[in-house]
Length: 309
Image (cartoon, rainbow, N blue to C red; front, top):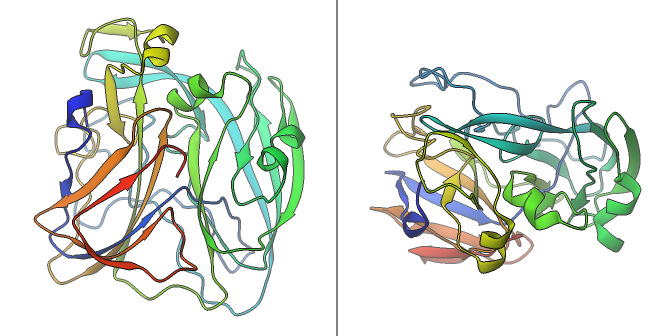
């Protein structure tokens, strides 16, 4: 996606689709299970056919569904990395990321699992960071326990008590600027009974970027705090790049007619709500706010996803 007036536009999925509209929890698996995604080429076309130095996350990199009926412990590591990467053709931006991608890696765990979460900060960073995980029922989502300076590492332990799709994000005092620069992601806590089987899953994140330079100007785009205060972004993007999930950039998300797909959608904001719509289709079932403990609403044409959900 590109300029702000495009943020209500959707994308074609040409299939029956279900939507979890919420931020999601991080997860790690034992030797028999992968709770963090592994990078892999798309079935229909390679993700990086266009070679770019980008932070754009592959929407197909989703950890596999959980098929066990017992709890396990996860050791999960997320690293805060500040990197300069391409925002659009000819334009770069100083992103703040989790594990070098936007949105941060999707984490997948099960209700009742325990997690040892290690937050690291790259030595090359020049700012402090921490992590607020909305799956943690505690002050600041554990952010005070994960405050790290460049080169530091801290670990906290928690139990996944309730199911849902939750956001995680940096929560230092100027967190809006950190989130706008890319520091948000999703953790999914599956319920005890698991989720219904589908043919394919995708993971999308929307946020807006505030720059002193106008949209599309070549060179390094620098952050504009005043524009963020006015809520006037120059860029509204999916997965950290202008037109990132298209054939002009890294390639579209591909599904086949007749497949059932599940879409995980997190909106980092920090200011704008996403009006999430699949052109030519409706969400056959939708869980607003990622509240999967509730019954879904059905045949939803457009789902609002507020910042931080």
